[in-house]
Length: 234
Image (cartoon, rainbow, N blue to C red; front, top):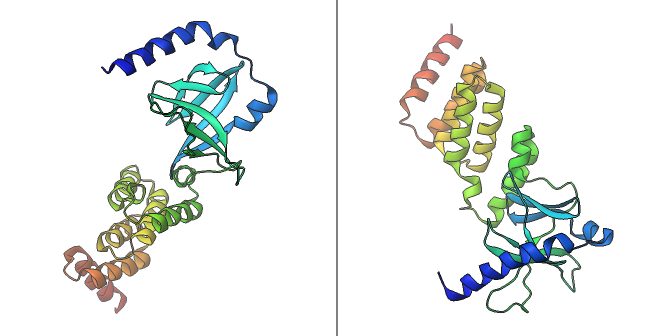
């Protein structure tokens, strides 16, 4: 462990016992700083106050930071010190990481999101596939290789719904995946299977056709198209 790191831990432990319980946050400060901050394109850090104690909610976990001063706190889960800042030009508020090398340096790390803002994954959990797709398309526009729009991940999610016989949910997720990855034969193959299991053979047929347009050697799609065409012509 670096000597600087050791002294930081000692200082923080000292402050936990001597400062945290004596801090008073004004109502104005709590109002300005409470809310959701964009940790990344699909993840939020929620800041709130509970019995005059600054609290965070991050990735489903409730975190009680170590309050060093009114506008300075340490989060052990991230091993970082933070403070709240406002950009002098845009007036937007941020959760800012305090640099170990230069504590006077101000960085604008995590933007405070507008009230009511929801991440694409939140919309997806709600079953609001239209808004989820809009959010993921925005992520794709900024970074087409982002891990948040991973084709395999959505496909796995879709098949989990299929195994649970939640076919409407499976179709919603797999349609979203097809919109994000329109050049993938596999996404249409999976979507066709979901439609077929849900009793919609026509939509299954349409998606198997799209599969064959991209990958003509898909045997399952070939067999379904042949059998469906034969039945339809009787």
